[in-house]
Image (cartoon, rainbow, N blue to C red; front, side):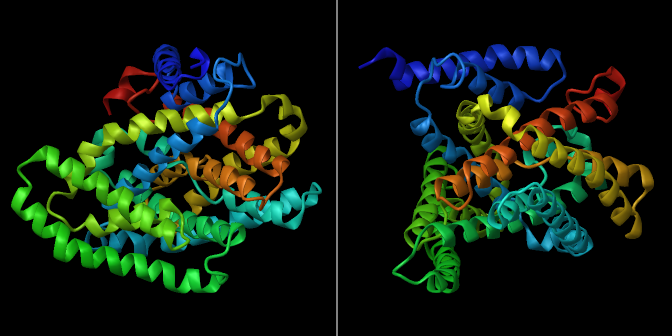
Length: 389
């Protein structure tokens, strides 16, 4: 086997390199995911070429997104979040529509096709869940309304993102020759099957064997990936299936334990995902997409904080909190990267449109992270005072 294509060697390069760059990132008060993306740019096929082929890595990396959606589903507790959802539903809908329309208009005016413009606009609807939650102090996340507002907005955005993923599914294939059948039957079938299996199989097993942690770990992984595969078989995305699997377990007494146990596994694959994002990015075309990407970044990072602030003020939130939430959400999401990759792979959008989304997203990751750590409480805040808040 060629040493350069050995899976073990590639994993060694990814995690050793990520550890080194992550150290520099922490000293620079930057989010770690920037280190992972930067490593992909550095040693990927468009960089030094130490990892010459990223297709296999990309396939493995999507397990991280699958687990991420599963864990988001685990936190989707209707009884606990319904009041916040009602409070933020209009805000999320209004901001999503505004940025979808704005992004579409900007790109269409620059000469992109309508389909490309629509998907670029859709990518702007979402803010980064990972940056939003990773840069929140634990006290804010668990005990203050700032974290609750952000979580409710991000979860609602994730629901919209799932709809976009379903639309991509519809554009890239046919299930038994009938896309409408897939949309109308596939989703309810997965939801119904998940609820039945949880009630009559999974819950009884947990009730009897929940003290055996290794068994719970195995069953949960099998549950997540199993429902994801059922969704895939019915023509939906595996990410949609994982989200449904998580929501089904949200009412379980051990849902929080499951979430804690799976976080390291999720993070393991997310490192590979963000590495693959950097490795797959052809930075040689940067100057070709720099103008539209820059305009989208400026639009996102100036209008998002302002719009969230105005809308949160209208529902009675304090000005300082409203502005802080807006700043923390002033970026484009990792789901946007997923949309860019999947839509390009499925032939829905052009390569130029995909690179515009990827470039704008990466720039907002870096810029918004610095904005947050410089001025707001964060585990990586620039000052000791902000780190202690």
